[in-house]
Amino acid sequence: MSQPLHEAEYYEILDEDNNVLQCKLCPIECTMLMGEKGKCLARKNIDGKLYSLTYGATDMKIDMIEKQHVYHFLPNSRAQTFSTYNCNLDCDYCTMPEKARQDPEQYMGKRFAPEQVAMFGIASGSRVICFGEAEPMISFEWVRDSAKLAKERGLKVLIRTNGFFNREPIEAILDHVDAVTLDIKSVSNEGYEKNCQRGNFEHIKSIIKLIFEKEKLLELNLVIHESLGNTLDETRKLADWIKTELSPAVPLHLARLLPAHRLKEISPTPKSLLEEAYTIAKEVGLHFVYLDNVPDHKANNTYCPTCDELLIQRTSTITELRRISLTGNCNKCETQLKIVFK
Ligand code: SF4
Image (tube, rainbow, N blue to C red):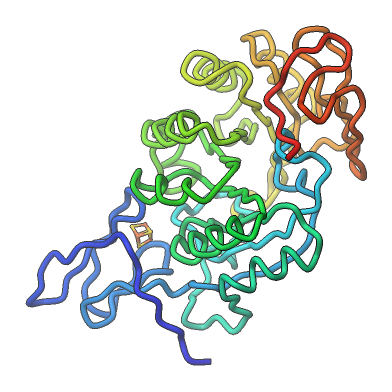
């Protein structure tokens, strides 16, 4: 299959005579000689221009939106989900390493034009288009073009990202996105180096603040496990930061780690550790804390932060709106919550 070429955005020519380029999409800022690819393998210097090799490369499925670990954005909605290829991080517990590290020049799968993204979304009766897995920002140009068209056609857009990208492309994508769910890998720069080979929490915090200040619906996710160095102190540190720098109303998902990739030999995170982390995040003062990958636990439900009424109940199979109005008010005490229904 011939490789469709789509020129990338966000790069600089460092040396015109020798065709040396620098990609500016993420803070790694790879320098590439002619014929070289960046660390994500998805962007290549061809004859002195930078090209995106993953434009349109995606798998597609229809899921309930809760599968994207977002609980406050169009709860119980059908979502047309596009999972893209390649990633700029290389996490020890990646659940799809073949996809994240694939060579796009060997890719034989489907490619969708932005028009098809919106078309499939509308045809399937979905209210929202989701871009996720492996890392949609790697396919920045395609995701931006598709999100723009989807919004013009009346669909909502959610992106799931690791947040390790430069400010300018993040700002550009946010113009066409309604909600963001962001996976935090560690609460320290050292943790990013250890767990994901690269990444920088200080930078990612600045991106999280940017998303919050742009008033996008934002949900954060932290994987809890001893082997990652993400346990109780780290939960407290993150919860404190969210409460102080963002808002106690930003949902925090604490996820159970399941064995995968370079961590196949570990045991899943004990439920007791997750429950302790949950208690700490609530004690710090966060209003909405959830336990992910623990099916049917009551910490999957949304409770009113004022009167503790059960508002939304989630089991492994269904999401049920209980005592919440479609304007996002608790039916018992009328507290207004930032939960988007339309
Ligand atoms: S997006 Fe890819 S090519 Fe660009 S700087 Fe990041 S890892 Fe390197």
